[in-house]
Image 1 (cartoon, one colour):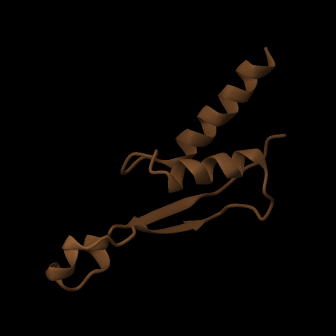
Image 2: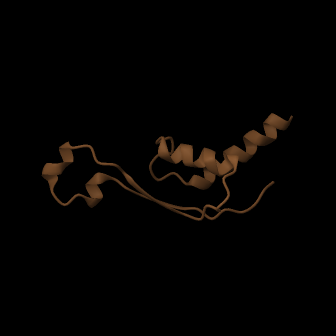
Length: 79
């Protein structure tokens, strides 16, 4: 099943939201704002979330490239 997903992904490292440079020595999370995922929990959405949350998506990379790779991998598994 193929459908369109509009995904807007913004990440905010601690250097963007911390006001005091003295706090940079402490561990703070990178905040992630993601729009466009559907409400269903299918395998593609789960895999895309894994890619984002485990830090596998390089900086400035578009998540749609990961969607295309996922879809290609499904085609090769069917062969």
